Image (cartoon, rainbow, N blue to C red; front, side):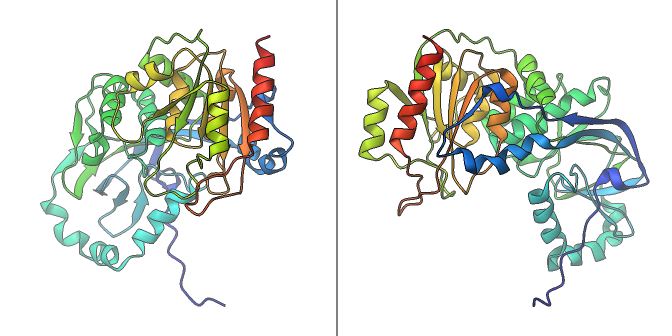
Length: 362
């Protein structure tokens, strides 16, 4: 029996008495089940993943009145040492919350909290800023559909500074998404670990149909999708086991048999429009679960999506995008990994799916 003391539960901003909401909308997740397909081999594994659509999430935005120290865009610390999560909801983002709570329990942060009052008056003050932050802002999916989509909440707040962290505008996709969704706002870069903010404007959401459709409309990327290309989105992750496919002789023969073209976004940064241009005119996209599938947001029917999911990636994110936009989605689950921890596929299962897709167009 463990005797370790669990990390303290750090409250989210909307739980605080000083928070005054401007937006607090419940958002149902409604899967269009007629577009979701699972083979007999994969079907038993998808019951838990499909539960993703049973939840209601929330769009939240409002003002947290008072003076706080903003630490790395993620935490607010009051002068008495009270810690608040700036843009997180406890019940919806357990992974983010775990990272945050463990950091707050670290010795270095405990020491920092103790010394807050001694440096309080030395910090620069930013009044009534919008704070845009996300724990996974370096990830294409999370920045696209859970971070910059919150800019839609800030219409009418043109005279408020918008704070972002330096790393949040490092990549090409981050800059492009921010510039095209922020309504022309110039970002206030928090280039130091801590600043003081008064009455910060905070927000939170989980990807929803609302955010998908808003991003499509705001980015306004014209797409031709009447072609017959078949795309294999190769993924070569640098660190995630179970995130890419084992390209066996049988799998490569399958790709040739059905005329798939391999595309890999892993080794260089393309603009979003460049990525979309490489995918347009597709009739089928085959890919392991990964952020490159965020680009489904900009495509149009008729399109069939074959997503490969392993026990390491049991998420319904891209299934949700496909369902929202009316794409035919085929989920394939494999718990077989090779010695490099790449996913091994049942090629006959893929052939069965391709026959079903071909029959749709006949």
